[in-house]
Length: 251
Image (cartoon, rainbow, N blue to C red; front, side, top):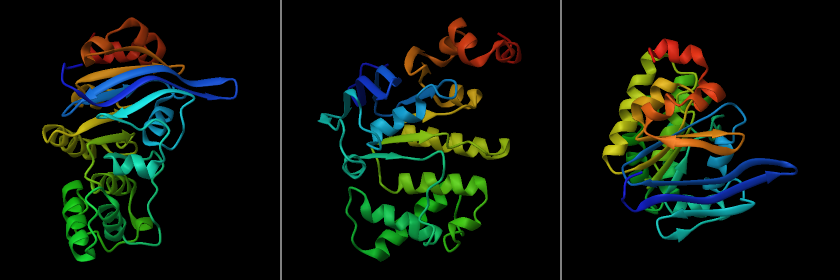
């Protein structure tokens, strides 16, 4: 990656479940204002990696660093307070609250420690507008379609004002017309200096937004580098993309 100081750094990260090594000796470093795309087959360890970084799982070995802080094995709320936010593949709103109240909770919990509910609500409404949920704040989350439920996940994460944003298949279930605005928002966030790790199965989307792509296979790093280089790698094609992808992309 760039020679800039990494905001997110993972060294020798491992997670074992009994006899299964779900994540094996993963190293990565992402500076501010950069996007690392993470791809790989189902079961490759992608979501486990996010869970380890965000504190939802404790690593068997290795280190997770945010800036100069060693947060290896820290609880999720401590990692969130350190400036790391994430989305979940399976959306997890507070179902007893409105859409706006979901985001207001995130604003008040974040590192800024905003205690005024009125101010937090104003910030929540600004975030909802940014992700495309303006005017839907009073709805219960259960009434949101798939695309809007994904937007609410993103809004809750952004409301924490993170330094590092981990996006776990935030585009899943979206129609093609809904993907482009999401990619534009990711690009805007990168331009604002946010550090992003993006897991996604939509290869064209990963290629469009990532500065580098890391490929996981059987829990280990298969390769990492610029998108064009990685997506043209014969090992990646054999392990994940398949030769139909190369024919479609004209390689």
